[in-house]
Length: 494
Image 1: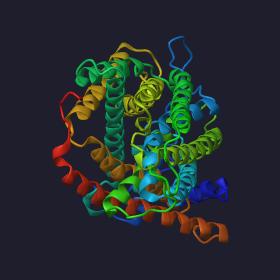
Image 2: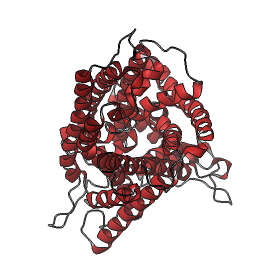
Image 3: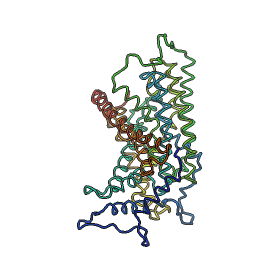
Image 4: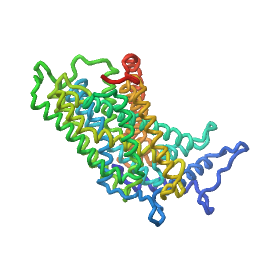
């Protein structure tokens, strides 16, 4: 989708060449004032080159020989696809049929397909940035390199600032997603069993998440991801078949009608909240750098992404339309609850693997990012050292306990999750990739008619991320205010 991978690399090389000197390191030390701050634009460029140089080496690419090596780079492109499917096509799909009830079938499907195509393009931009800088393993690394050219203006080390913003944003985003999976696990078991206090279901689920999160490579999770993809597909299929067999009184003029276009539009905040549900359904981008890092051949990432986006756009569109048309105005979110009680139990049982495994993937990504922050460049990354093992287990324990506490503590959790998706998912999925492309192609925006079109597209993506961010904050905050007394914090579900 980029006019040329060569374009990006030539642009970067030219940029670095101008800012480099002829000493052994290739980067001249910046000229600083008495306060230690750079004094010229050239100094800012040299700082940017220095930051880039620290992110040019893949931290997993130089494993030493030995039986105790942890082999990271062993994912094939199709295994990566299944991991991405398990991460992306999990909870998001369950809210899409209700989205059509609010938006109407035609506008809803158009949005699902359009946002899916855009998310495929923005996923490619993650791959472009990572191929240009193989040391990038997280959103924090990406923001660090994008912010680096700003140097130390206004007394701020912008590279460090970008790193902090990216790391904290990714940590918050994925921790809340982990909490949503703990909560969904609790709801599922409560629907299936309902014999004990739901808080205990949350504790049991957290213990399972911790155990499955102990492996240190995605290779182990890739096998579970196949099961996850099958489970969500079968659960949705069971729901569709059940609704089709019961044949509720649906239709454009039935007693339980569906609508091609919205009628009696609800308040704006409710409409925009269901739009954020679609954004959430595609918001897997925050983990892409981590996935690319463990590919045998990172340049095969576009194949993984193409398979993912083809499956999720088709699955989202078909399942949303079929379930909504059969359930009509009685459609619920999550969609599995739109059927009879016995079918609900069966569907939730089938969906348990995807609830578990998608949550485990989020936990794995965050654990690895934290682990790399502490141990990047040390033998603890690639060797089974005692310190490395203890640290990994400790991080897994802490993040999952925090996720469980969040899942039990926050009133009106679903709306709060919508706020977190708005704050971070809007940027990770649409806004930030536009910035990545503009960064990679700086100075070449008008090179040809293709680059002019791509420049316009990526500016629109940045504006789109900002719009979802701003309007989403308004909508979710308003919803939180209206529903403040309806939360279930630290209570047993009935």
